[in-house]
Image (cartoon, rainbow, N blue to C red; front, side):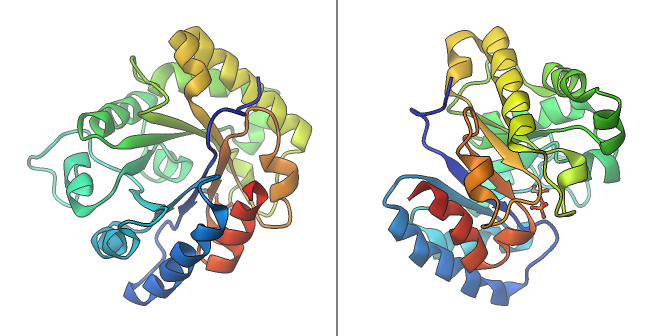
Length: 252
Ligand code: 13P
């Protein structure tokens, strides 16, 4: 089923990019968001150092601020980590969990990702849960099995459209300029929808499924209008307001 009834979400993951001066890009995104007239939700996930100041800039606007990771616990002796409660306190309304860069750079398991998604819910944040196959797994025809395994291991019980968003990000498409064909994206998103239905019943229809991996203004019309594609998680192209707004313009 298409996600006609779900408002799309275009989220920008800035990764480890952005100093204070980048607030100028956010200001431009906030101004440009008005042209969408509520037809899509916009979100920027800056590095944690910028969450509080970005939340102040975006307050009262159509742009939400998210974080890129959280610790599973609310507080404690975990030097350098940030809890979901802290991110909420700083002004975030969402947090990305299980991004493939964290899964590989920090050896995050599905169980660890699930604990983070639960922490997000505890703190009142929407979790943007990332899943996706590597190039080798795609070549071996394991895409659906990998996605099913990641969902089974990292989607918490009681997940609902109000507290979780799934982001399908094929690892080989991230930062490479490569994307799956629209047919392949549609196939994986339909499969994820079916898995969500099996796990969550009717609530599975209410969970947005974003596509991520080399989304640009040029390919957004082909990728983001597909059935069961409820928006995009954008990396590189979200760093420039014009590109990010150009992607969101698909929903105008
Ligand atoms: P790119 O859009 O740069 O390929 O990154 C995608 C991504 O990893 C978003 O989380």
